[in-house]
Image (cartoon, rainbow, N blue to C red; front, side, top):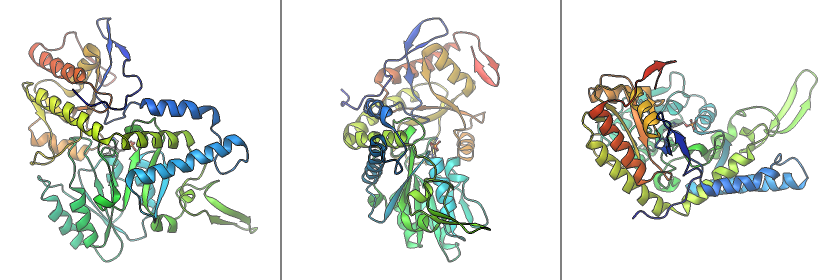
Length: 424
Ligand code: PMP
């Protein structure tokens, strides 16, 4: 029996199938966005009548919102074990957090990253000081590969961008070992924890990273709440990320120009009325996960073993891996099925079985294409199945049985490409 884990809202949602029946929805797309935890839904319900602008109003609702918002910051600090000198900036999501950091790094900072990163981590860094390292075929080789790149960096500030867990393959990167090398070369490390934080404890001290970026909607909270947690100094020295109210301590009219004194971090980078409900939802999700890590990890490991064993029994299924070692993974598998386009596989799973998966190149085009080439897949897209707290053994068994039937018998109804996607 699987351990008791926190429940998610909508676990018993029914969805219509192409044959007119309805089945319980099997959401196997947790890596894209995870369903909301019941604790989060209850907390949001309670706050909704009370939200108001933080730090500004003297009214009761404003006081409640300010308190909730600042408590959420403390929860995020504890969630990652932040240091005293770290700050927590609320953002929209991981993409926003990484773009904020990219804007805040000191001029001339050398940025080193592996080329398999998600676009959110790959693209914000521009200019001649960005070094993209081809991700090696083994996890063990990532450490010397990073070291070689750092050795070639000019003097000055350095930043290494790392992902905790791949959104394409679920594989965990050897973050602590990579961070250790980075620090030896005077580099800071930012961890894209979008996929790792929902599934494993992320502790700044144990991993040795300097910044952590997370997204609420991957952490079982709704969209719009994210955070960048990490060293305050670069963020404090940087121009405000967005300009406007809230980011300013004082604005004075000098006639020909405005004199603006920017607030200290974190407010400096949180211009505009902040997303109090989003921050609260994210914080409640973090608290729920923190109180249940052992059960969460056991539950997901058991279901993931079942999923991988099941998928291995599907003829012609080619699963993708970044590394040759079969190391620890969060519950993500991407694959192709010989002779059946990935878009069609995803359409059949949805229309005939009520299973939600993702197909495509997962905003990690370089990684996905390389891995597809490696397994000899004949296309540029893959199917991704990803599990989490909303997943049951029945969902796992259903997707495996559906794929076996699809391979043996083909689709049950006719499909055509409509507006660029397969549809019944
Ligand atoms: N990094 C990784 C590894 C991701 O999987 C994602 C989301 N797919 C992101 C960053 C970006 O997250 P968001 O869209 O919430 O900004």
